Amino acid sequence: MHSNKYIVIYSTVMVILVAVSLTFVAVGLKPRQEDNIRIEKMQNILESVHIETTVKDAMEAYKKYITKTLTINNKGTEIAGVDAFGVDLAIELKKPAEEQQLPVFIATLDDGKNYTIVPVRGKGLWGPVWGYVAFNDDFNTIYGAVFDHKGETPGLGAEINTPMFERPFDGKQIFNADGIFVSIGVLKGGAKPDDIHNVDAISGGTITSKGLEYMLKDCLTNYEEYFKNKGKI
Image (tube, rainbow, N blue to C red):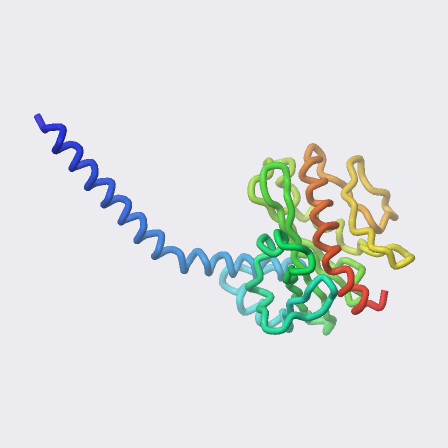
């Protein structure tokens, strides 16, 4: 029978070996994980302008279609020397509005037209929700939108990243006829067919829907001056 001292030493050695092994695995996998995050981000940006890609061709498509990136402040002024792709919006949104760095991505599609893409981020029912919204050259009309989440309920709030929910954003406008920023509402019970400022909420996913509505208003407000200056709204 082994002594208590032996058991303690053996257990300690095994814990150390396992910890060291896990550390080596984590360090080894980190570059691959970071690459996967970058590629997924590229895919989401491209999906906002209706370009579907795979993991293999996402980087090539991103280089082809994203022809310009810039970072601005909430006054719409470009901030020199800041890589838009590297900006973490989750961090920026914790700063005072006047200190935030806001990414902008310009896509030039095969039709020769330019579309402006901005990121959005907010809170759902169970965790963060985020996405990208692309605008036509009037800087008012939405060309496309893509959303995702960390842990919304399958079949309910998780539906925000399905075409059924995302497609109705196409053609909606964030400024009214008087040039006032109104964002996009997500209405429980449904939006009228001719309503250019609202979309239908997810059935059974009211909290996630409202969270997404708040996300759009809070994040797009930061780009209001930029959109007005560019679109002459």
